[in-house]
Length: 306
Image (cartoon, rainbow, N blue to C red):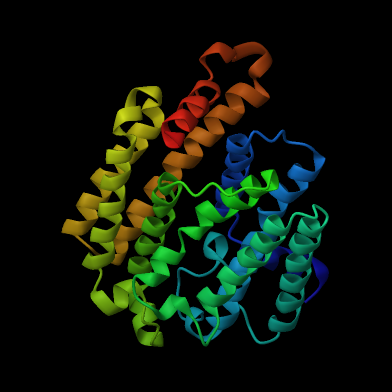
């Protein structure tokens, strides 16, 4: 396979729709720490897009190579189907991106930041690789996925020399666990055939659906005192509660795919809306006094830190 083919496959492996989550979590960590976004921070933030996603999903695909082959959901936006010929260059690229994250962290001479860089690389490994293979440990597989949110946040915050260990941070990060639980329902048939003991395989599809519903309800309870500050965020959580309730009543792989796609469509619609309004057309259409995130985030910080 030539360079162009490997490049296209590398993009597919990294699942581009998942690039934005860790990047935004990193940016939020900078904001909460009161750190200005400079050239160094931008480089680290970019490392948490394609490079970090490739590490996570590259490891996952390497260790799931055989069971991914018959799964029709694999391919395109949901990753690439790897062969044994792909393994050497995928491993090398994982090592290159891992070295880039560690070496960049070393430049700070910040022991906490350096430690978290190694931890950020260890989590994807223990999730996918034996003997740990958390992916095959029911419920733990979804719970560990919350690190997708709080990991980059803490990594950025640690540039201040401190950690931000608020329980709200970990509870909000459970939204990633809820999404992971949905994914185990989507793949339950193929994981069962492959002998991968995921959340949905071990306990049945309704259990992860209930877990996702519980995460959504907990998010609604947490956001309730803050409801009026961001109707967009609040409506998004209400939507997740409604969809998760429906999935709990009808827990099928098809319905899990519908909910998963609906949530992503909601998120990316608003990302596109704000990007178009404030970045592309800002000179003509944006009223920055109404820019929700400019007023929402300081209020959120006050709420979380109390």
